[in-house]
Image (tube, rainbow, N blue to C red; front, side, top):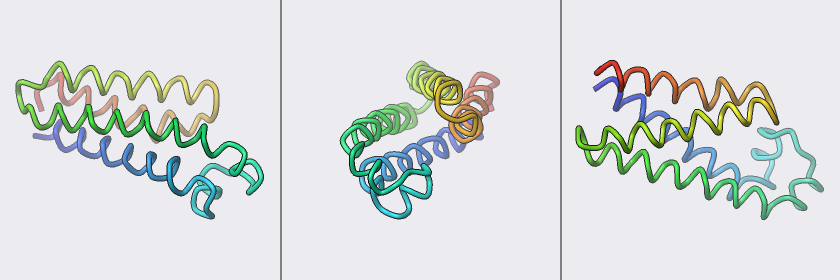
Amino acid sequence: MLANVLIGVVAVLHLYFMYLEMIAWDQPLGRKTFGTTAEFAAASKAIAANQGLYNGFLVAGLAWGLYLGEGGFAVKVFFLACVIVAGVFGAATVSRRILFVQALPAALALLALCAGF
């Protein structure tokens, strides 16, 4: 039960990331969140939307795993691992903050899942 709640939290976070990158990227909220200028946001909008789409796929995978229930263990593990790898890579290449916002919640969900919580 706890694992599924944490997986739901990770999915909602990535739904929000998808919104920020696909819709709000060049709006004040998106620019403030990512610390970009209006010029940079306008020039990189297509790249950010592509990135947002990948976050949407993570949401879909996590939702699929939740939908499958106990039979979705492997699906949940796979998509949580994808989130963790993306978070670690983002922390190493973009901002350390990504480690705490993206990878840590997924790692906690994976730990809870594997521990049977």
